[in-house]
Image (tube, rainbow over all chains, first blue to last red; front, side, top):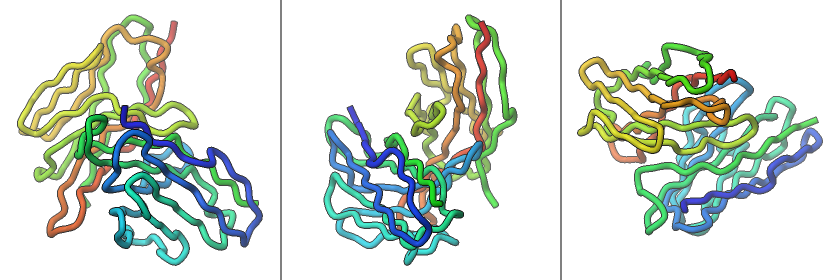
Length: 119
Length: 116
């Protein structure tokens, strides 16, 4: 139980284009979703937190106009990297927390991650 | 600033031995702690959690110990297997100071290498 999926798992794009990453909770309702970024051999850095139907709360130093987050339903959140540049290349991971029989409200369940490479 | 950190960046063990991964935290207001396992190219996988009103919790081959006095957390893996090789992160669930959302603050990670 408490499964979170991400799509795509890997994306390569040209500099200047925008990329959308989807995060879905498959068997529970995710009241809160989180987006993280992870560089090689480093820990996870929280980018933003969102509640369904609300604007995302961004961490200090994260540009909200560059990393657009939409949490339109209790099972789906999207992260759009706008006008991507090579320095945006990273491993992006979402997590979700929520209720129901499959999930604990305190625990974050992570997706498999999306490897973004910007050429 | 406050952080969650790890004592050892890498740990090498022999297959069958027990492994102990340590973690220190500094925020006494944190009330919930989680250990995650991350394999290369994958997202973190939940292993075990513990709340601040407990000092020990056991799972299948894993035990988490919490010492609130010295703000220390450890993960013990019994009879370590090659499949346990991964990076292990401790995470501290930190309540917001005023409203907002709880945050997970991750430690730097410890790489566990299991040798046959």
